[in-house]
Image (cartoon, rainbow, N blue to C red):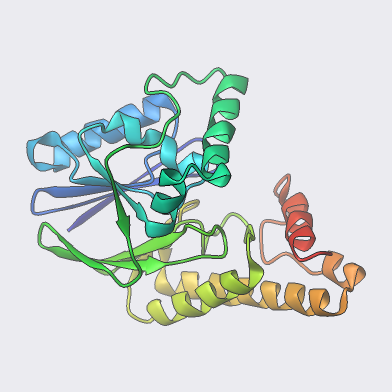
Length: 261
């Protein structure tokens, strides 16, 4: 198995290409046109016939999904929850596309394929196992950052989407679900060798475990403050990392607001 990681200029967003026995998965192709050209070129070099077997979305956020149009021959695999949301015309799924459209417009980013969900989709369920080439891929439902998140275990690697990032704090949609996801990831980390997060550098399992523990402690403090309505305590919670990154304190405030603080 070969695992290539191409990192975008925006938020260190990773495109991960898993190739094995001529089959090829492209996870979260991102983001700018020249970066997607590089993804297509890499697929051409490692995949049988130069074609991706499938594109995989770890979740529906706009910075992870817009690149699918660069690989139009590939079916798109995504969580069953996101597949249902798209099929139902859910406002949240529509909002992801609106955010991509707004970003591209603001920064003059050409998007020849437009801003649309793929029509060839396969919804994946928790615990599902798929053989790709000569490798087994295990699907994990990972909610908390978003309601439609999934992760993959392939070979000795864990791809957890936007969880376990070394360059940002947890961006919380549901704190209780996020904490449960971290507990599950801590179990998985005992069985893998490396982690490729959605943002940031590749990690050893030990490095990822330290991030998971720090993030769980951060969420425990948030949840404890929310339980008694203590806004001052919530505001004073130290960030697990990236405190000097512009905007990260605002993300912490957003997390507090999600818990009613």
